[in-house]
Length: 268
Ligand SMILES: [Zn+2]
Figure 1 (tube, rainbow, N blue to C red):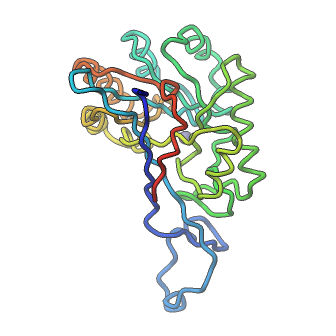
Figure 2: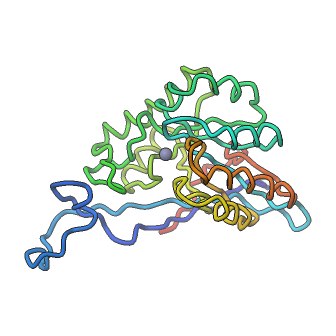
């Protein structure tokens, strides 16, 4: 009966990431020297990147899409925020404590539109929520269960301290996790916020490509992009993409509209 029953699947990273001493670049891309041809037996951890969908609309209903934005650190892309407000488009925004601290002028806009903006947890300091000492895209992970808890709880506490509601969804920096860190985050009361369409590849894509990513969204998709990079072209594409989806008659839903746990249908 639940119209928002999500489906959940896992995308396993292409290869286990080795624990290795030295820089993150070395750990992710070992140098091809004769000495390294015979790989040492090092412990490894499998990182997963959860996918999330919302349930498709019934046949005659408008396609249903969830817009999610990460506010990792830095500033606010007003091209995106203004579009959401002016067009009355609901969205889920994942904020870090760092971003909340550095964007006080924007917080009243979010607070004044509770019908539009759901504020969720992107962590304390934008550190990958992986409980093993492994770099993710060159970023050192939290590295221990205690550090993962600090990242998750710290993000949630900051959201409350800034006057927003208790968060229920968590998306870690890089959106990658170990299986054990996923279990820990769930144990802290959070659902893991995956996605199904990568809208801006970390705000690195040209505007036209971002717009195409948006307009490629199908019924049930969850789009991820960034709202903290006002100096990059990607945000222009996000704004145009939102308008294009609205023009197509998409029904925008937020993650809080999903009543189920969101991660019970996990397969690997
Ligand atoms: Zn982020």
